[in-house]
Image 1: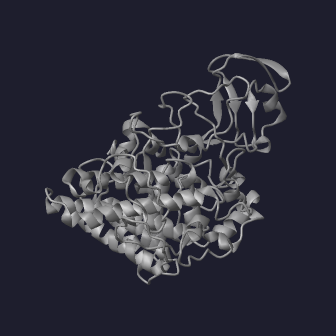
Image 2: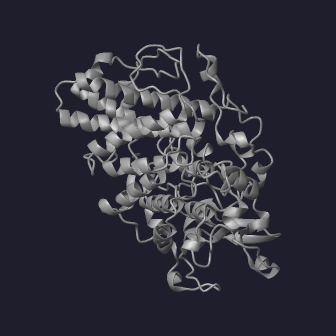
Image 3: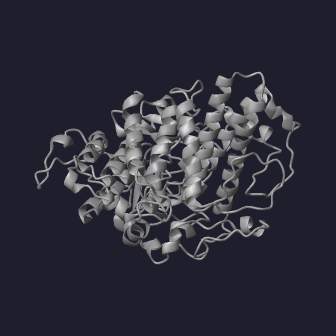
Length: 548
């Protein structure tokens, strides 16, 4: 699976998307259309279908920009062209590239999957058993692509067969029909996929069940909701937790250990990357976006260990000051980098006096509270308490850092992107159970995650209210509490905008916790704009979402 993405341009250079219809006849290889009908071509086509995952999962900043910005968790840093997604200004419009790029590439991915599914019966030289698994992989991927589309854009064009020529018509299918297609694909995937993949990174039965659980959880609060959605989401999540041997890592920070640690007991399914410069492509770029500008400050210069600071996403004050119980919850300290050690020694003017910094001395400290005058007077380094933090100076999220890049200028990181991990499955089960009225069982699942998150000894400490500090009781459960627990656990992992929309909390929590976004956000922002290119180049009527 590590070299899977190599095949995308080869196997699909002559295939266009039925909905996108922006056919560019830019043939980049001598591979013929009939190649996909051969055993090797069919296998390569399946591999190529995975490559479009990078559209959303770490291949560039689009997936993060569309889900991290404009939430209660993150506001904009100083740099980048997508600040309107946080500020909800008029620049958030149908011509913005982030929407067009995601739309076009997801439809290319869908047509790649359609090609595999359509061609499978005609491929000879492979057993039916092998073809069934490969088709199930394609249906899993198609479901994933459509699930992203329907949550972002609402009604979208539904195409379930291969397109081989230019198509100029498209229609927006009802949300219910899109969800039905997603669920039908995933039901087949759950039945046909193996529990463990022959190649790490291929779709599996527990991955399909994880996705299906999230689909039911999301549909349950949509216009397409059905009465059993929460129950089905809970059953699927509970089965993933109990049936396949997954377990939470002993420590929260272990989930994000680079290298061999990326394949830990908590990872259900991930999007693959590698260190092979011939096949890595854009790699995983998430390491770029959550870093403060450290490299221009006294005692510091840019290096591989500390990373390339694109300073796109700045945590909100709510995230830093209110979200975590820093006394008992270890995830705050394990999520943020707040100290930088000198890698550029010399004598510098700091706090109005000359300070000599040696390699390894503290050069930057970003405290979680205001320091006293006496404390500041003793600091022989740059200090950025909350009152001095701005779009360039802020605590930096560590879970995506990539100190194994070949050089400081490399943007292509090698980390896998963890799409489904067990901690979220517990949180899905808890939310679905709570929404079904079973708060007792919901609290049990939530407390598993909170126990792992607790600092040593904190699980036995009682608060002033005589409650265990890192345990929640059924009477404390609300959708806001679950959203906050998801934030503490899943911060920055391309989920927050979806979470807030799913729970009907986007406007409320953005207005309350993100001052930069509060003035601009409107009710229609629960959907993204249909790309104007799609509307302009479709001969049939293709309506825009309300408000754009």
